Length: 89
Image 1 (cartoon, helix red, strand yellow):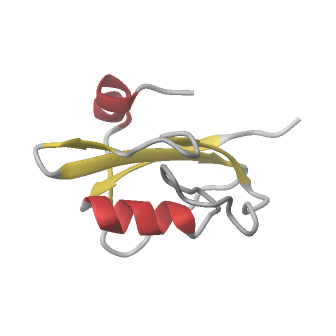
Image 2 (cartoon, one colour):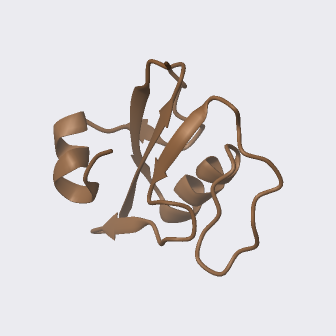
């Protein structure tokens, strides 16, 4: 059984989308990812779904078997704020 760590990030929509793509996420209408990072257990938004943007800021989350620092251009989001905006796993 895996222990999961949830990372909650925020930033510009395109930056957030590109960051998730590094781990295997794909957005609406995009083809399947070449490969899913083996550490990753899931994404918010789920694969194929649009990213939630509030007042120009995108909010995303990912669970993985190890903590992952936010990619460049994204900041860590308070988990309570993230849950209230995009939900949780």
